[in-house]
Length: 196
Image 1 (cartoon, rainbow, N blue to C red):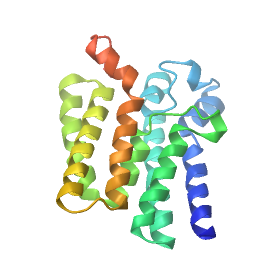
Image 2: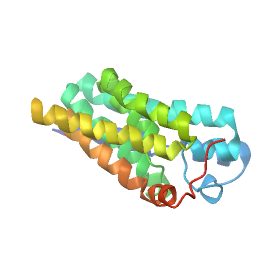
Image 3: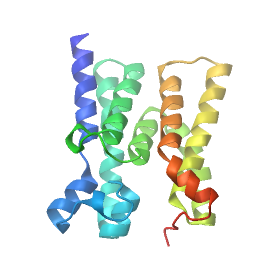
Image 4: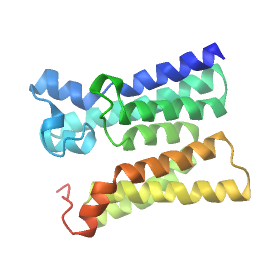
């Protein structure tokens, strides 16, 4: 039990490290939470720091989800990997180092889902990319991906079983959609910004 608690705590702390915040502060000299959308994530990194910073932010945020899921899977088992992966996502969303005000967790969730089920990630990324190409709205693409994850996870649960991985996938889907509620409001009003 002690080992599991340590793994959960480490995964949360890992997720709490914000690459976008650190890049903005120590390379560009500003607090990313005061620029653009105020969100310390990939999209705002692109808008406030450019393509290279956004790509680095994306890679590192995805890596947090991968490594978080890896920790539990390596030392306990795949089912527990879902929980440690979730803690990395929660750390990103509610980081202790930034007064619990973090990003939306899209990239970190992608890393976690991809590590646990590459097939599921591909299923969700596909529709998201199509929507992104058609709309040029990153938030709409993200929401589409998580709605797909939610539907596929519910189907998996009802047709097979609601195992730890399925339950965690459902939870992060709902969490991410909820975290995009302001974006949803702007999309419905036609006021959401396009990436280009």
